Amino acid sequence: MVKAPSLISLAALAVKRELLLGDDVIPYVCELPADLFDILLTYLPPLALQKLQTKIKPFRDGDDCGSPDYCFENGRKHGRYGNFNTVWKKLFKTRWSGVTDQIEPVDWQQRYWEAHVQGCLDEAAELVVLPSFRGLISDINISDTILNYIGYEQQMNHLACDYSKLSYHCQQFGHYARCLRLQNALCVEETCQLLRESKLQSLVLRWIRFEEHVQALCKLLIQNSETLASLEFLHCKLSPSFVEGICRSLCSKRKRIHKIENLSIDISSFIENCPSSVVVELVSFLSSGRSLCSLKLRHCHLDRDFGRMVFSSLLEASSSLSILDLSGNSIGGWLSKYDRSGPLFSLGAGKSLQSLRLLNLRGNNLCKADARDLGSALVHIPNLEILDISDNTIEDDGIRSLIPYFVQASERCNPLVELYLENCELSGRGVSQLLDTLSTLRRPPTSLSIADNNLGSHIAASLGKFFGTSVQVLNIGAIGLGSSGFRVLQDGVTKELKLVNINISKNRGGVETAKFLSKLMSLAPDLVEVNAGYNLMPLESLTIICSALKVAKGHLQRLDLTGNNWELQPSHVSMLSEFRHNGLPILILPTLQALDVPYDDEP
Image (tube, rainbow, N blue to C red):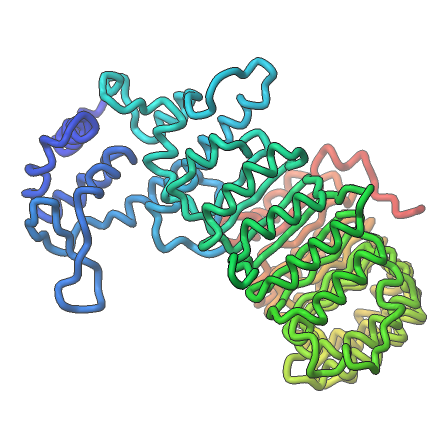
């Protein structure tokens, strides 16, 4: 039996249609009691909700706290009802259920229409790149899927405004856009006109390679130069005129200073026939950035000279840079010519280095000599908290040259918190020396990764000592522990641990892996996540692990056991069903597809 629609839903449907087609119903909506008004809001689609909210202006009744009252255009005051923001949040979550913002928006109406405009632009970009496209971008028809989401109906076709055109959506909702992504196909003069009401704070640009795109981009940057704080280029090709145009568009004409706080150039390249000119323009841009706090030049084919000039500009810049990411380049030797006892490295110079908190040099073709030079330079970066030098062949000599810095950093007001040394061609001897030193420090790093180094089982004794420090996150995946290494770890770990997250995968530990996990769970009450995949554990390991989970009093949410060749029986399935966190299984088991592909860590 089909349930008949309620009287409220029928009334809401009628109000919705009237709101979409005209303003006549608004005075009557104004007279609704507070509880009915709130219920009505939950039935309205975005277009109708937007129209109603534009007729209302919030005001406060003499106090600075609590939710606002509302005043309609007719001047009539209404009580504290009409929770528009809650309704907008629900509409957003319904339409984009998979989208999670790092920081929850304060204004969900703004967030909704910003995401809507982005969706319209993405659709338009897909059409514009087609060879068959002719005409104006503004005349592109928005798909029925998007129109249905916002509550468009066919009977609205006779209205003066054309809801189906991209131009309507940009004109009506473009002013809500704060963060946008644009493909090169939309970097044209017409887009600048469509987005003329936007006050962009963040802009991501992809595949910008030709002069025609640069000219339109510069115009868009000028339009938003007062508000734009974050600029990202992805898959772009930068020429001297490109970089110069960006700087000229963003910089104040009087002071030649821009307001960009975050600059990222990722998986891009600089035109090779005049690299020095590009460097000069980029250095000029960096020197003009008093507000610059994050600089990322990742996978941009930068060489030693380029890296050296960037570093020099940061030594002399007056910005308060906190993030420097140069990963994925080839800048080996970039610090070799600096006199670290000279004036440039004095503690009074280089404001950008003084404030630096994250330095990412992953995959930069650095060798042990570079590690030695880096150790000398790091002494003059007093607030560094995160250092990543993974995927560089610094070897044991390189890590030994950095140990004095790690010791000194532990005594600072802001000690080194995270250290990443993955795949650095380190041996057990070199890492043992590192771990033995870190274990004696008053404040060692709370996060350490030494994964993908062939350290062998002998590293287990030093690891056992380090487990007893304040370390919370530890990645020791694929270091060659083997069964004997896990046995040594079991004996070495004897007191309560502070571990929250640990990766012990790809160590071929067999059943000893499960025995170590059993002891770990009993001694680490704060443990939340474990990756123990690809350890050649036999099926009997599952019983050991489940028994440990039953008696453990911790907060484990995820235990990854993928990559172990198990043939699970119905009895195992029932045994595993009790281990869940927030309705999700704690144990992540091997998939049927992966069972036929055993892990092989041989070169």
